View 1 (cartoon, rainbow, N blue to C red):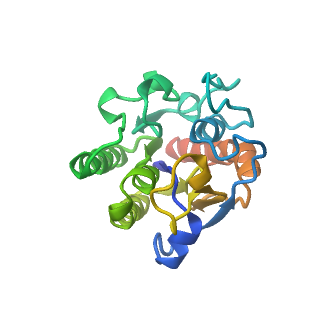
View 2 (view 1 turned 135 degrees about the vertical axis):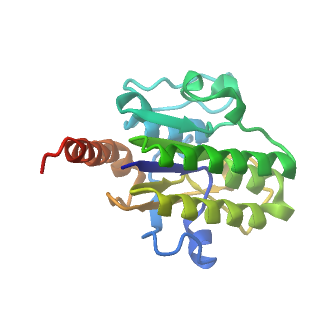
View 3 (view 1 turned 90 degrees about the vertical axis):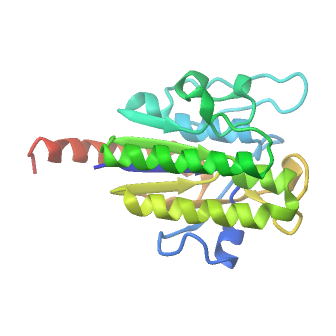
Length: 236
């Protein structure tokens, strides 16, 4: 039995709904209700999601990295991790935990294709081997939203189709984005182009706000993984 956690950076919940993506997965908006100037800052939000806590992050110059107090989710349970949800490896959360070939970059279509292909191959292999927890992330929606506006819809839709197929292969799944993106303004720069319409879908937990999700989803995941281990041992 495997739990799949998919992080889709910048996937906007309204875009998902309008375009009928991720159908039948219970997808809805996760209101990104962090406060302050850095509320929609990628490096802050993913740290909070994967560490299961609420903390700060410096945005601007000089860059001051935010180091969570707790462990990342893949350090708490037997897990495999694919695709860092940040561009710059030097700023990548859990850099040592991510295979270097999976670090993403601002890139043309062939690189985006390579990114999603690696994601698909890696996750499907881990699911076949019944890895207890698989954490896979891509920044494709955010990258194309900012930097490839003319092809943004194609790549976002393709990312969602892939995510849906992978979720259906897992025993349990969780799909989440860190924030949304102003899809009426593809090509916008910085966090000003981000929205608070994060995307959420899960077969084992339900949250409506980012703060409650960050504080509670690790506990929900632990319950699923413990039940999974007990079943494997023959306990009911």
